[in-house]
Amino acid sequence: MPKKSALSELKRRLGGSVATDEDSLYWKSFDSSKLAFRIEAVIQPKNDKEVGPVLKLANQYKIPVTTRGAGTCLTGAASPVKGGWVLDLSGLNRIRIDKETGMAYVGPGAIIAKIQQRAERLGWYYPPDPSSKKFCTIGGNIACNAGGMKGAKYGVTRDYVYALEGFLPTGEFVRWGADVRKYVSGYNMRDLWIGSEGTLGVITKAVLKLIPKPPCKWTLLAAFKNESRALAAVRALVRQRVIPSILEFLDSESVLCAESRTGKPLYPGGGRSAVLLLELDGDKKSLEVDRKVVLAWAKDRATRYSETYDAEEAEKLWQVRRQGSPAMYELGNTKLNEDIVVPLRNQGALMKFVMQLKRESGLAIPTFGHAADGNFHVNIMFDRGNKVQEKAAKKAVLKLMKTVVELGGAITGEHGIGLAKSPFMAIQHNKAEIAAMRAIKNVLDPNDILNPGKIFDRYVVWDKIPEKVKLPWDHK
Ligand SMILES: Cc1cc2nc3c(=O)[nH]c(=O)nc-3n(C[C@H](O)[C@H](O)[C@H](O)COP(=O)(O)OP(=O)(O)OC[C@H]3O[C@@H](n4cnc5c(N)ncnc54)[C@H](O)[C@@H]3O)c2cc1C
Image: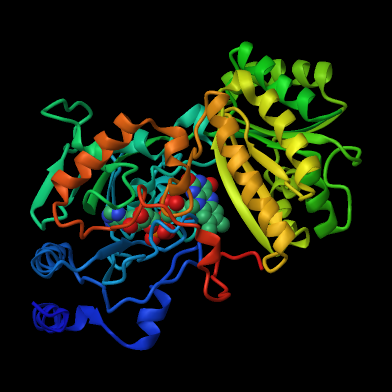
């Protein structure tokens, strides 16, 4: 059946929810990876009941459908690589908090920062905290199992999902789980959907777990002689059974980036050293117990440190973390923002490898990360158009992926695979593992219509970026 009739049928059934004008098509043809692909229609359902018919029609005519939330994904997971239709669920953004039970009932388009604000107003707390939280949606966070800075103490998105409702790729309605705290009926399909990058189903509702809001926060910024001392200090702290709500590591190159942006030293004493930014939260009494341990630890291991309970003072300490990322574009016009993860025991070895990679590639590779998780953003900076640097960047990223797997880690700790990491799947997984994943996809999506071309197909992605666009969350 010709594709034209599919589009007419879609318009007939969904009317005003379907856009085909050039502007709508353009803005939904890429995500934050800026990998853009030509599409035929954008569907913005007015309610979740409109989703099933879209998928049924797509199956009938074998039209690719890519679901999207805010499009902040960095890997191309929301880029419609096979064209077809984009199902934009950002408008399904309702949020209802049950203040008695501490559960949140949300639509897939609900923005993370808004869920957090609504919960906190009622004394509840939703901890997963991706840096993109002012823009990204809960549908995208669930589909990517998004993490953030609070992983070590509070876990990731997966740890806060009680139930999901939505549609199979074939268009049938399903509900995985319920708004109950215990649920073991049948296979855990809810967890299969979480992190499947929109390839196994479309989420139209979620029930989230909230926890009581921690009443107090305390912040410390500590400088260390070098990277390996800072990372050894992380392990020493965990050994003492202190798990901070935040423990951010920045190598000296990231610190220099932040300082170049603000034009002044941003941590105690200034100078070229690695830093840890630490936050404890909880009730005042237990927080004080941990604070004493942390202060003794800092006195012992850091060259200098500053601490505060005051929110305004804390914000000043945070500048070193907030200013670093945008300033990295002074080091190259393109960033390969890798999000690898290694076991804590191998953090030192990873950093040693990154230092060596900087030397041998000749590229700037400022590295920072969520140190208590072992999850690091290794930012390989290069100038697109400079053939020598492009080649060096490709070589560096491949070497990085091989090394993290050798160190017992993973090629991605929070952003997922999408298009950007698919060439490295065979480094992370053996044939049997990939075959098992593909088998699940084939059974649930026999016509391969839902977010096709992701996770398993290989692309050399940075050759396919057609043009430069600026997104609201871009630093430059
Ligand atoms: C500046 C910046 C900072 C970031 N920081 C972090 C961070 O700290 N931690 C982190 O984990 N990530 C981070 N990210 C990556 C990104 O924000 C996350 O991957 C986020 O989960 C994507 O959400 P989204 O709403 O933008 O989803 P999109 O980008 O629109 O989609 C992402 C994926 O989810 C699928 N999807 C979306 N909605 C649905 C749905 N309703 N049903 C099924 N599938 C769906 C899409 O098909 C796609 O595969 C950052 C990105 C940027 C630009």
